[in-house]
Length: 275
Length: 289
Image 1 (cartoon, rainbow over the protein chains, first blue to last red):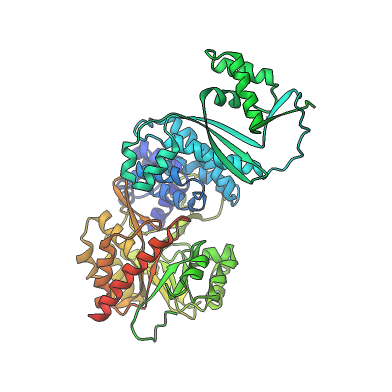
Image 2 (tube, each protein chain N blue to C red):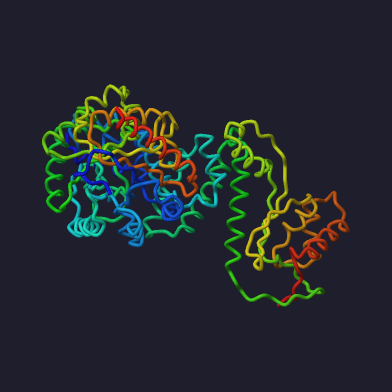
């Protein structure tokens, strides 16, 4: 049999995941399409397609070594749950598409993979990997808020009687089932402890402060979290309260208004004049 | 610097990572040399700055020694330039392929980079048979003619049986060595992974390798995942690797042992020092014996 044909076959499997999937789903039918002798066909029929797919995942995983600095918990949990190769094998097609557009920046690579991982975890049964989505949301929010701090657009005029409420300077709110600090603590103590981590719902605010050049993580109550989650930079104070009331109808508007006032007092958000 | 003419006391090196300069500032005596990949130097020549503090051993994954597509002349020229600039005592290269020809027999592929060979971007262990041995021997002769320093070939990890394989990796390597005279870079993580994939006893099989050809040894971590064993430069080497290292040292005049812990930006410095200490202990035991 021709070694060239085998090399080409493996290269194509690793560079064209759709082809690999077709081999996995119907090896015989796909081999019937090849113009190769019976010996070669017989050899190719013995290919461990699943293992080649995992190898493709390993390649993509290694090519993301430079993206993990800001996502240590996410990576540690993917590894703890034995999901790294499967996740990267599933991501490989999108990764290759990104590479074909030219050498991506680290930020572009990170964003592409995180977006994929979000969707992957949302569409996969993740009950067997508690805390994974939570640490992903936590680390992604921190990373995105930090990235927004580098965007130095002109500040709008602050007006206590202004109509719009805007974040100061960057804000994300997350409602989490597992507290990421608990996961981090378990991982520090030794990964087996992660298996015993219990849910501890938390509302976290990722507050990027340009002056301090940092991202503070604040624990919020449900009322404040709902109010801040409705601050989108376009809504007036009244609209923020109305939107928060829709999220938490059991809470009165007065309490929601108080939570917003408190956030303004803490300088997490501010009023600005409408343009 | 690892010197083939020096007495046989293996030197210890580490693979370069973004934190190597800081590590060397803090622990200048911890290692004797730094392994730097050609592919990094090609994109980031500043990576060669480490030469100011330590000798460099150049590593390469681009020559596709076991492939059917020879590297283009420009790439070989670049490798040679870095061989000269780094004054590396040898050039380590994978006994693998990284590129493959488009094969019409496989039918139409996705229309990307039409007309160009497939470029996998990662080294792949070839089909282990006599046809590949022929190909490797020819490639090595061609490649070696471009370099003033010896070319070492590194055993790749085998993650799946390559169609067309008719021999085991140890027999394949032995045949390549016998016919080409090439020296070896023995990656013990790769060797262990291959043993687990192929189902052989690494300790018994190691003794069948032409260990007298081993010049450099690689040590790194291994991950067990999805019913397989995988290369992992972000974790500690298992004890089996160090036991294999002791066997190699008892039978070979190894010049250098490189710890490859360069995949994680958060690989703790104290762990790296512990790993260096583990290897140093094995080397000292071998010297004492």
